[in-house]
Length: 398
Ligand SMILES: Cc1cc2nc3c(=O)[nH]c(=O)nc-3n(C[C@H](O)[C@H](O)[C@H](O)COP(=O)(O)OP(=O)(O)OC[C@H]3O[C@@H](n4cnc5c(N)ncnc54)[C@H](O)[C@@H]3O)c2cc1C
Image 1 (cartoon, rainbow, N blue to C red):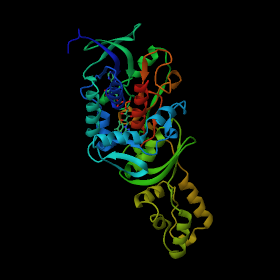
Image 2 (cartoon, rainbow, N blue to C red):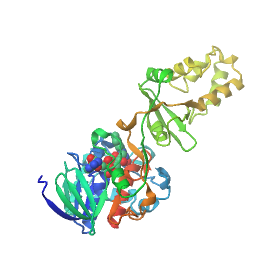
Image 3 (tube, rainbow, N blue to C red):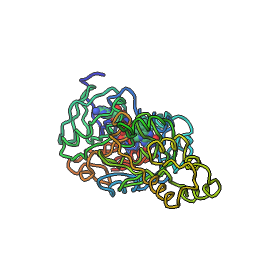
């Protein structure tokens, strides 16, 4: 690309991910000349790897309470104006078929590449241009908008739309570009933290959890801010699985998390019934009817389940105390796996400085922030893409 090139557009979008490409197509359809630039060699790489390669593109249960933000009201307007149904209508126009998994999560029937093709096709059809391998070197505010110097030449744009995402998965091209631009123009950035990320442990916990790595069980993971009842997975570094990823978004360094290992079970009644039927059997054999045997063995070795050779010797009080302990099993992670494996970023460009209707900066007219770089973070289950589509749509309609 010739670095002396001079381009003039109505909207320059930085970041050819979910939000940037969606914005490009919608703004193009509204009649704007749009250019999308990305420093990576390929567009929308996170869409490609998302949902295990089938892109969990939305959740039919999308509601404002599924999003974490310093201002929990901020996302309401954009989410109301672009709904999961709007996105599935869009997929229908492209003959992309999908199915619902648990908890209202919608996935493509085929590969997530179909969504990338749709985003790129829509951008092209709307007259938009995409330039990859293009790094932004400088941004200057002008009277007419912005003068952006890139490795591929200078671009003059009336609107500058920052859609460069958060910090998760740096090896896929994630950068703090959006935060740098925001700070430079006087915006506040809420401290970005890795979220939807596995927990790691040290010492005995690490060894114990590694010893049953690969084992999954249903739990209710909670702290004083949130609770999620889903599967948990033991890993060679600690704990993962949907319940852990979800609660990680509400966790800060040094805090504990309470796990209800008996979630969804009427365990005290089940244990009492087992005792009545098999009074000579051990507590461990009774617990194995409720929890995976390897977990029962581990909990016994850790002293969380007492060694009781004959259930007949266990009082109701002792059963209640055991249930209490297993439904309040407290763990203290030493940290998370960090940006390397985090699915998203909690925090980002402070919504106080943005219009909730249009995503436009309140400080710099013509400057927009959309998608994951904004301090709006969805739960696991398609909510983050729904935010990318909805925030992009709001900005394109501006
Ligand atoms: C493994 C994984 C699985 C996921 N699965 C799901 C899922 O199934 N459902 C769901 O809802 N969410 C999922 N997510 C989250 C979802 O991918 C993101 O929330 C979403 O992609 C955010 O869209 P975005 O457009 O804001 O940012 P991104 O999609 O991250 O796009 C940002 C773009 O900006 C570019 N960029 C960055 N810095 C610069 C720079 N300095 N200059 C130029 N370009 C730059 C990047 O190369 C990238 O192309 C997953 C995330 C990961 C990591």
